[in-house]
View 1: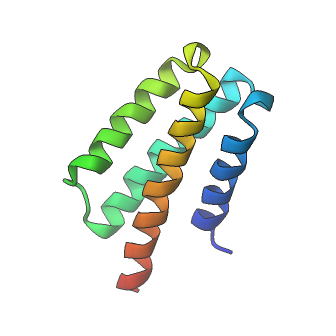
View 2: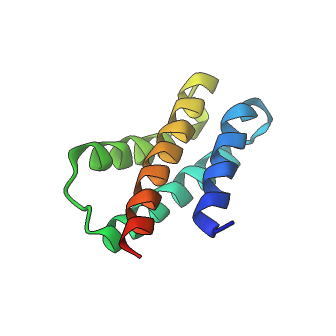
View 3: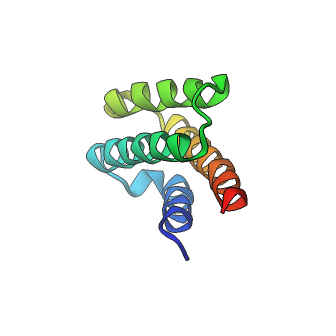
Amino acid sequence: MCLTTDFIAELVRAANEVDKLTHHEISRLLDRSIDTIRDMRRQTGVTEIRSVRDVLIDLRLSSERARDLSVDEVRDAFIDAADILRTLKTVVDRTK
């Protein structure tokens, strides 16, 4: 598998095991999601899609307040990140 696919799987696993993660681990995964999404957006040229930008803003806010998030909010953030990454991966794979 490629690194992106592995990371998507890691996010889905984390979403299913949120209660086992520390606040630091949650914040770290969200930060990695943001960096990966930004990199993939640059690769694809998909920089101005509002939903992607909105998810990045939500992920940044979630990362900054990881201690205050409920399990459901963390799970939703991980799933949102995985969905965006899956979509961007599809676009990258089509351009190869």
